[in-house]
Length: 102
Image (tube, rainbow, N blue to C red):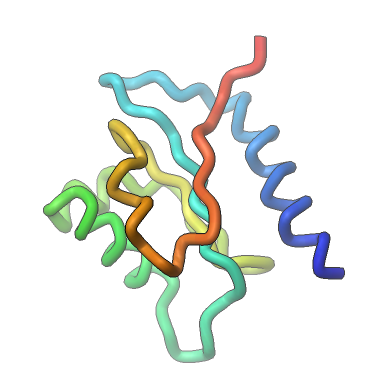
């Protein structure tokens, strides 16, 4: 079952293509962090902390975070101008831009 999570991530990327991604020059980014954290750790606060560091503001982080994946794997969807700031986080295993299929 090790293949199930990456396959699920790929499916989510494909499904998110139907949501659209252009707004104020920002793109939707799907961020895969990996396994769910130990019990007691908050997914939401972890994701906000990452976005807060990237964007430099808690209010911007709250505005950018669109969805949290927390049942099968640890990840989130955020609307960002670019993903450059996400590259320096060791806990992020994969990041993908949302795309629109035409």
